[in-house]
Image 1 (cartoon, rainbow, N blue to C red):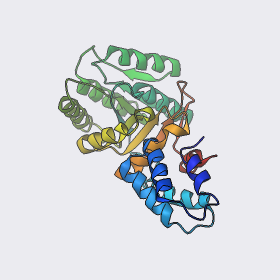
Image 2 (image 1 turned 30 degrees about the vertical axis):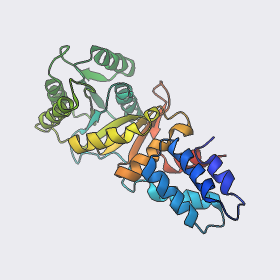
Image 3 (image 1 turned 45 degrees about the vertical axis):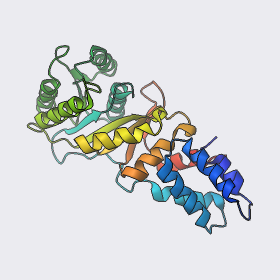
Image 4 (image 1 turned 180 degrees about the horizontal axis):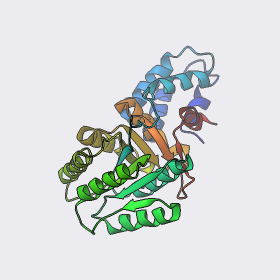
Length: 280
């Protein structure tokens, strides 16, 4: 059942709704991780809609709030396309790195992975395991070593091998937020001595709700996010945060993860997403 199922059922065939009806619908949107600002905008636009079809009217309203930026990978003009993957621990960041690598490998691309989350041994081991499974080279260093050093080495390897893609997994937690952002900035600067960073993808867990918007805002201000990977999007009731992020920040969601296996990962399709929000 989609987020807007009850919304549509209530406005269908209704010649008018009371203020209390609209406030009830507003409350339901808030509970769906859409956030107060966008929820109020959607209610106001729905009240003004003159569409003969509530479904079509709502579809157009929602469509207007999605990002108009390209959802394609920003590819390098020459040499490896370099992707920095960031996000807080627990969002599925390392798994998303592996899934993205598997997806690109399936398109006949040669991929190199960098295990630059050196502060978390489990993340390095996890990426190595994925690399062994997929037959993809993983560049790593010492536990608690310098992440920027691993990233620099991986850039040199990717360049030397003429790889199509370099995907860098990064730390998701340090002593405090400022430390983390400083470390990510250092990684980015060091890599750019060898290769330009083409994409900075932020991984967000759809189940974190409206907190995902705060994460997107902080990482964008600090490191310049170009796209989002939304994980755990295994039910439309958890999808409101995607709409909120695109509407409030304009950052395109480029990939979605829906499960644990490598196949549970796909490019974000806005029409499919909107159908999920409005399906009865």
